[in-house]
Image 1 (tube, one colour):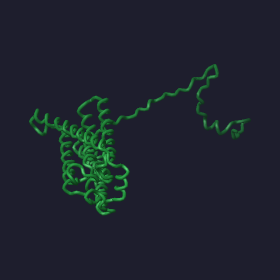
Image 2 (cartoon, helix red, strand yellow):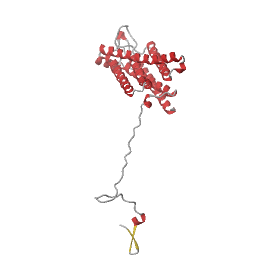
Image 3 (cartoon, helix red, strand yellow):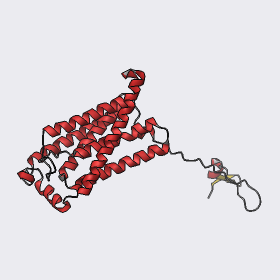
Image 4 (cartoon, one colour):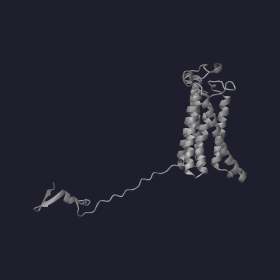
Length: 270
């Protein structure tokens, strides 16, 4: 457990360090005013090139917003489980540790969102309804990755239905993939906004897994891991007899193998 715990937190620190370094690079490398109202963004050549190729697609913007609502509904469902446990037992200690850890995790994700709304790295490549809006990292990307990556563990804990658990796991990955790609294609984010969202999400999810291990909660990969059993095949040699059957050769005597006596003298066997 300790080595596994160190592995999760170590990966969380690494991904967080990569995210911080990437964010700092955005603020200093190729920063140009290529956004609306002369707003600046780093990696301007790369971001501008991808933005021109992709353009803006309202359909994907609407789709990703709906997926964001779905993710929030999923989080609300787990929160409702915790509230019901608390109301029934009237004790916070009786609420599942997994639910409490998940609630703290959601709070950290919310704090990250508020932080980057106040400390703006760059603005959107387009103006939507409220003028210039903070764009880095993509909040929809962070929201969906963090919620849907942690959802299968909670669902597998709440139900023993293997089919439902597997369906939830696959659906979570599909939703994440559609969100990441769809948010970029929608044209409401710079390319670096999406990359930053992925990096931050990876760090947060690894910290979540580390916290789950620290408090003795089972992670989904350990819970669903199955050992592959290789059947033993018994091989038996046919016994001697008629019909061309041959028996297994018996071990030869080493002395007979090396020497044979002929006419009272010892000679090397050929």
